[in-house]
Structures are given as structure tokens and as C-alpha cells.
Image 1 (cartoon, one colour):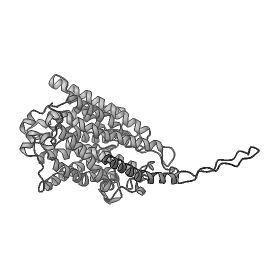
Image 2: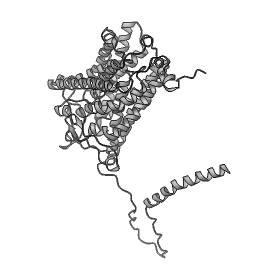
Image 3: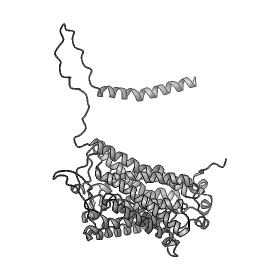
Image 4: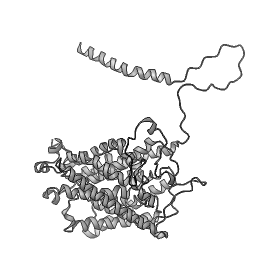
Length: 488
């Protein structure tokens, strides 16, 4: 009897949900054609009757190819976080922190999306509120999501976008999410999960939005002429500086963890690194906002720079330590990806090679020499985010001011309405661009250093930023009641 009642209940629930859908679908179907009356002679061919119903043609501004590429590129970037950085972090940390590190990534991805659509998107890309910030407001509703994409304060300097606001909102979300996830790499192994839950939306609201609007949303740095193709400053320099400050405020890992912190699974880490590398094609290839020639150039430059940086870092490891390091190769790969990010569509292949060489040398010295000095070693930056993201992002942004080739057109077109846009660096005669890049870098550094410090200090009055000693000793099992690898 109980099974019968349960079955009837399921049938009723399904019926209540399906019948309205069937009715609505029926209303949206074209009316069936009336069969012609029987005749003795064949009638002359008639034009087919126009369909009736509620079908609506695609708007004239929508380009399916561009829309498809933006959605695909956004998905590639999302894969960089989930599962890319999720399993990269889980593989690089000590065994007892694998679950906690991976879940910090997953939580941040979810949390940022909610904050993004409720208010942070418009603070980053909406109408101007202040010279460095847009007006907060929701990015939802059918009228908003289905309308033609535009960045109000930057629209005069770019052609009309040919995809909907929903696509633009999601595309920019995955960039925002990966920024705070990268930042989290600095505090793995000791920041309390409760503090992380609170910190992520606060940092996204008060720090990320300012940098994004200033450089990408048509804010004061963009108006001055500073450029950041895909996030060398907005994402990587910001994450590196904020992560370093967060590591200093939260405090170091246990001393035994700092001294002995072997990766628990390098094969998993390599899989995450591979996803990160290929996902970067969406990172830099999607930022022209069109499936055009510059998108292809940005993808090629990204991979070329990364290959050179990885090889250079491996050579540096071999010369310094007598053998190549897998973890070192991953760091070189990341430094190359980050270094080309602010420049990908502005430089030629020769510029990409130069940036790759620099990315394999300068961040290497930062991580292997500078970070080990008495002063810098006081701050426990778990995965070296300052070097691989902060230093590499700063380097790439400054090299953009040096190497940007005016022949590399970001927006390609014909006629006076779409002549193309480019950036000219110091090497090609425009010293001012280098100065603008330096000014933008200084702003991002100061904003993130002071803002992150203030947020964490205020939080510390209400919640403990650091796990207690017993939890630090036990790791995942104490935090989540779960472990990455079953003991059985």
C-alpha cells in the first residue's frame, strides 16, 4: 500500500509539472495547416503560408559565430578554475590539505558568481559611479540578459559587440572568480574556512571591482590610455599582491609544514597544470570580443610565450640545482601564461618570445632568490603566488608598454566605422605608453595592498582568520571530516 501511494504521488507530481509545459509548448507551436479541399485538377503552386505563433527572429546585432566563441572562451576560463586550479592545488599541497585546498577553490567559484550577478558586475562594467567604480546593481532579468552587450563607459573606443549581455556577464565572471582563487594559493594550509567564506565576497566587492572598472570598464586608467589585454594587472598583479598581504596577516603555516611540504600527487598537479595552460586559450583568445584575426594571434602568442618560459625556467633549475624540477616547470608555465596575459593581442610573436624569456628568468629569481631572503621569508606565501603571478604580471604589463606593436590590431574591420584599434609601445616610439603602464601598476599595487590589509584586519575582530593549532596538525579531517585518500 505504501509503495502504491508513493507511486501515485510521483505520478501526480510529474503530471503537475509536465502538463503546464505541454500546454505552453502547444501555444508556441505554429497552427496546423488546413488540408486543401479535393479538386479534380491540380492547383497552381502557391507560396507557403507564413508560420504563425510566437517565434521571434534573432536580433540583427547578434553574430552567432562571435557569441559561440565568447561562450566557448568563457567555458575554457571556467575550466581553469574548476577543475584546473582545484586539482593543481590539491596535488601540490601536503596530503593532509588536499581536500581543504580544492574546496576553497570550489567555494570561491560559487560565491563569486552570486556576488557578481547581484552587484559586482555593474560595479566593474556598468555605468560610472566614480572615476574608478561603476554603479552597483543586479545583472539579471530578461531585459538585461537578452539585450545587446555593451560596456557603457568604454563603448566609444570599441565597435558594437555582437552577443548578448548574458554572454558578457558570464565571460567576465570567470575572470573575476579565478582572481580570488589565485589569491587563495598564498594562504593554503592555515586560513580558516569560515574566514575564507567571508573574505571572498568582501574582496570581490571592494577590491576587484575597482581594478576592473579602472582598466576594463572605462574608468580613469583606461581613459588615460593604460592597457591590460587580459588581466596581467587586474587579475595577476592584484592576486599576487593581495595574496602576499593576506599571507602576512593570517600568519605562516606550522613550522614543520613550512620546512617539509611535499606535493602529495604530482601527476594530479600536472593534469591541473595542463588544463590551466589550454584553458588560457579562452583567457587571452576571448578578449578581443570577436572571433577575429587578433583572437588567433593572441592564442598563438599565449602558447609560444608559455613554451619559452617553461623551457627557460627548466634550464634555470638545471643550472642552479643540477636537475630539472617538475614543480619548477609548472611554475615556469604559469609565469609564461601570466607574463603574456597583459600583452597577448598587442605584441607580435617576437614580442611573445621576449616576454617568455623574461618570464622564465625574472619570476625564477623572485621565487628562488628574493623570496628566500631574511625579509621576504618572514611571509609564508604557500605556492609562491607573488612570484608566479604578481611579479610575472607586473613584468608583462611593463613589457607591454615596451613591446606593443601598432600593427597588431585588436579590432579588425573595413571602412570608417571599424578601422581597428592598436597600442604603440616604447620600442615603436611611444615612451608615454610605458609610463602609463607603470602608473597603472602602481595603482593596482597600492589598492590591493591597503585594501586587503584593511578587510582582513576588520574581519579579525569578528572571526578568527587562522585555524587553531589542533586543526593545523590534523588538516582535512579536522576541517571537513573527510580526507582525500581513504586509509583502507
